[in-house]
Length: 123
Image (tube, rainbow, N blue to C red; front, top):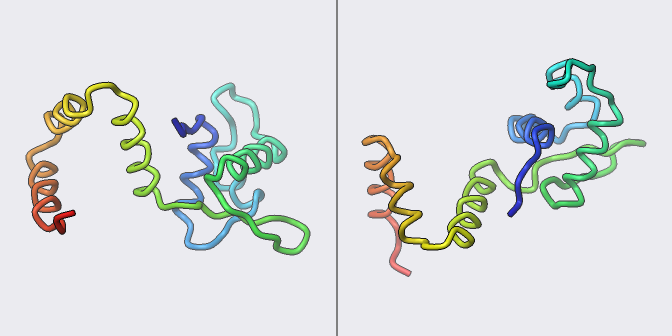
Protein backbone atom coordinates (compact mmCIF):
# COMPACT_ATOMS: atom_id res chain seq x y z
CA UNK A 1 0.00 0.00 0.00
CA UNK A 2 1.35 3.41 -0.93
CA UNK A 3 1.24 5.20 2.40
CA UNK A 4 2.87 8.49 3.23
CA UNK A 5 4.95 9.13 6.33
CA UNK A 6 4.26 12.24 8.41
CA UNK A 7 6.87 14.46 6.75
CA UNK A 8 6.08 13.00 3.32
CA UNK A 9 2.43 13.94 3.84
CA UNK A 10 3.40 17.50 4.80
CA UNK A 11 5.57 17.81 1.70
CA UNK A 12 2.81 16.42 -0.52
CA UNK A 13 0.33 18.92 0.97
CA UNK A 14 2.61 21.73 -0.21
CA UNK A 15 2.99 20.24 -3.68
CA UNK A 16 -0.76 19.60 -4.06
CA UNK A 17 -1.51 23.17 -2.97
CA UNK A 18 0.86 24.70 -5.51
CA UNK A 19 0.07 25.41 -9.14
CA UNK A 20 3.78 25.50 -9.96
CA UNK A 21 6.62 23.04 -9.33
CA UNK A 22 8.45 23.78 -6.07
CA UNK A 23 12.09 23.60 -5.06
CA UNK A 24 13.26 21.94 -1.86
CA UNK A 25 13.89 25.42 -0.41
CA UNK A 26 10.33 26.55 -1.21
CA UNK A 27 8.85 23.47 0.43
CA UNK A 28 11.11 23.82 3.47
CA UNK A 29 10.06 27.46 3.92
CA UNK A 30 6.36 26.51 3.71
CA UNK A 31 6.61 23.75 6.33
CA UNK A 32 6.30 24.31 10.07
CA UNK A 33 9.70 25.45 11.34
CA UNK A 34 10.12 22.56 13.75
CA UNK A 35 9.24 18.91 13.66
CA UNK A 36 7.27 17.01 16.30
CA UNK A 37 10.50 16.57 18.27
CA UNK A 38 10.90 20.36 18.54
CA UNK A 39 14.05 20.42 16.41
CA UNK A 40 14.41 22.68 13.39
CA UNK A 41 13.86 20.98 10.06
CA UNK A 42 17.03 20.64 8.01
CA UNK A 43 17.20 21.39 4.29
CA UNK A 44 18.89 18.03 3.74
CA UNK A 45 16.05 16.19 5.50
CA UNK A 46 13.43 17.76 3.24
CA UNK A 47 15.64 17.13 0.21
CA UNK A 48 15.94 13.44 1.16
CA UNK A 49 12.17 13.14 1.66
CA UNK A 50 11.50 14.73 -1.73
CA UNK A 51 14.05 12.43 -3.37
CA UNK A 52 12.35 9.44 -1.72
CA UNK A 53 8.96 10.66 -2.97
CA UNK A 54 10.45 10.86 -6.46
CA UNK A 55 11.74 7.28 -6.26
CA UNK A 56 8.33 6.12 -4.98
CA UNK A 57 6.71 7.90 -7.99
CA UNK A 58 4.70 10.32 -5.82
CA UNK A 59 6.41 13.28 -7.49
CA UNK A 60 8.11 14.12 -10.75
CA UNK A 61 11.07 16.44 -10.95
CA UNK A 62 12.89 18.49 -13.51
CA UNK A 63 16.07 20.51 -13.50
CA UNK A 64 15.82 24.22 -12.88
CA UNK A 65 19.35 25.56 -12.98
CA UNK A 66 21.46 23.49 -10.59
CA UNK A 67 18.52 22.27 -8.52
CA UNK A 68 15.39 20.23 -9.08
CA UNK A 69 11.82 21.44 -8.86
CA UNK A 70 9.11 18.98 -7.94
CA UNK A 71 5.40 18.55 -8.57
CA UNK A 72 2.93 15.87 -7.54
CA UNK A 73 2.59 13.06 -10.07
CA UNK A 74 -1.16 12.85 -9.40
CA UNK A 75 -3.79 15.05 -7.82
CA UNK A 76 -4.79 14.66 -4.19
CA UNK A 77 -8.13 13.18 -5.35
CA UNK A 78 -6.39 10.65 -7.60
CA UNK A 79 -4.07 9.65 -4.75
CA UNK A 80 -7.00 9.30 -2.34
CA UNK A 81 -8.90 7.13 -4.83
CA UNK A 82 -5.81 4.94 -5.27
CA UNK A 83 -5.44 4.50 -1.50
CA UNK A 84 -9.14 3.65 -1.20
CA UNK A 85 -8.91 1.11 -4.03
CA UNK A 86 -5.86 -0.48 -2.45
CA UNK A 87 -7.64 -0.72 0.91
CA UNK A 88 -10.65 -2.35 -0.74
CA UNK A 89 -8.46 -4.78 -2.65
CA UNK A 90 -6.49 -5.90 0.40
CA UNK A 91 -9.15 -5.48 3.06
CA UNK A 92 -10.89 -8.82 2.74
CA UNK A 93 -14.62 -8.60 2.00
CA UNK A 94 -14.88 -5.71 -0.47
CA UNK A 95 -18.66 -5.45 -0.16
CA UNK A 96 -18.56 -5.32 3.64
CA UNK A 97 -15.84 -2.67 3.55
CA UNK A 98 -17.89 -0.57 1.11
CA UNK A 99 -20.98 -0.93 3.33
CA UNK A 100 -19.04 0.25 6.40
CA UNK A 101 -17.70 3.18 4.38
CA UNK A 102 -21.17 4.15 3.15
CA UNK A 103 -22.56 3.87 6.70
CA UNK A 104 -20.07 6.55 7.79
CA UNK A 105 -21.14 9.08 5.14
CA UNK A 106 -23.14 12.14 6.11
CA UNK A 107 -26.54 12.47 4.40
CA UNK A 108 -25.04 15.13 2.11
CA UNK A 109 -22.13 12.87 1.16
CA UNK A 110 -24.50 9.95 0.53
CA UNK A 111 -26.63 12.17 -1.75
CA UNK A 112 -23.50 13.26 -3.60
CA UNK A 113 -22.41 9.63 -4.01
CA UNK A 114 -25.87 8.68 -5.33
CA UNK A 115 -25.74 11.55 -7.82
CA UNK A 116 -22.26 10.54 -8.98
CA UNK A 117 -23.26 6.92 -9.39
CA UNK A 118 -26.44 7.96 -11.23
CA UNK A 119 -24.51 10.06 -13.73
CA UNK A 120 -21.96 7.32 -14.42
CA UNK A 121 -21.88 5.66 -17.83
CA UNK A 122 -22.63 1.94 -17.64
CA UNK A 123 -19.44 -0.09 -18.16
